[in-house]
Length: 442
Image (cartoon, rainbow, N blue to C red; front, side, top):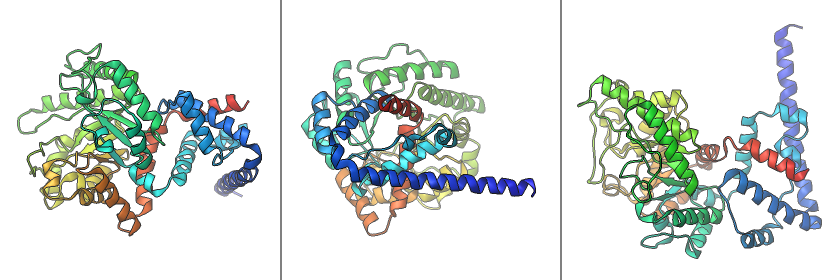
């Protein structure tokens, strides 16, 4: 028997072992459900342990003691008692299961347990005002809690008007996270300038003038530290500010280095960075904006920024502009609603597999030509993962939900985007969570 045959046999044995582990997990879960009625007290205790672990590890959920008691009472009948095998089991099995396998297992488990309504809502990023209907939100109360129970949005974005002082924004974000059924992105657009949502109101220590890649990275780390302190986890920055018509090659390379370094600095500080926007930022507030560049033009200019960021793994999310690129797309469809731009260019041509956000869908370039539900459905069909600021959130949400129910959009397409979103929300934290679970079980 040659080495190739042995290798195939080894692979078959490993595949069989993996299958057996998956089947064993399913049997354990079924057994847990059967005996759950007799171990309610243990289940309730596990709820406390799990909430405590998630609070320490993910910093997404921070409920007060009263809320933990209420959660335990409401969910004790639904708790699945997982064996330690769910996070690797014995040492031999844990060695066989890679970190990526564990991450995929957690993601798939989360998605399979979510109702369709929550999965669809998880693709939306809205303001607290869009979610609750208030004019200006500066705190999270019962209205926020009720809205999040009905619409489990994937992200909440905050602007200057929502930030009054350090104590206020910290409490607001902490409370919002504790009210959400699932981990939620808390977004802000912050570059350290006078236009930044945080820096313009309460300031950020350590901000200097950005002159090169080093100062860009240092500023990003200072911004990331401030964001973490207040409870933000996602920055709609850096903004790509470049025009091939009025900058020479040296200036362009500088913009590229600064943008990539800024993204890297944010991610090194634990934030999700979002390059804004692909292929370039455009003013869509006054109506349709068309850019005449071809793929060849873009490859010699803006695409190089995104290629560098993707190659260096320095960005987890990219926002796609609402401007049109007729010489790439063939028509005047806004890029963020175009399958040729999102899937054809950004994903396939440039190889980006992170989270794709639409540009704000409440701008004139979109609202003059699409209803809220039409734009949201078009964005998902184009390949976008998250719908940013729809004109009418509830109408957009109902539109996507209807599209899934009538087969216009498949559930697999929704799950595909959720997997990308959850990979960011849970990546890098599984080992800490596994250790917490082991310590608590032990």
